[in-house]
Image 1 (cartoon, rainbow, N blue to C red):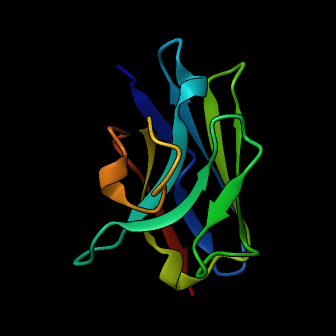
Image 2: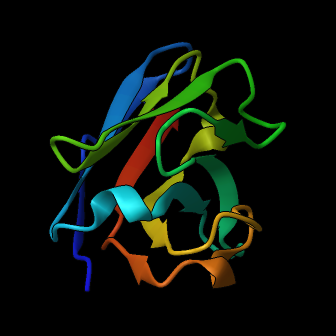
Length: 124
């Protein structure tokens, strides 16, 4: 069982930055691929970024590549999403998630545990 709690969301102007954090409970954090997804009103849940169990590999959606960076600290059971050059279209609720799989990281159904989400709003 893994419990996830996100923090760091807020309101920011276009071009600004935010850093989201996700704190995980449990002693097996390093055995999970961690992902970030987002969901805007009226839209489905969209893959944003993911990081492998060791942190040696990261993956990101084309829409955020070069702007968002995912990192993790297995000693502290945390995963972060650094978001730079934010755009109004990045506005959404952001969720971190944990997957026991090492593949299909871009699919929501690959993830067993989800946080409650944190809202990011980017004004133009």
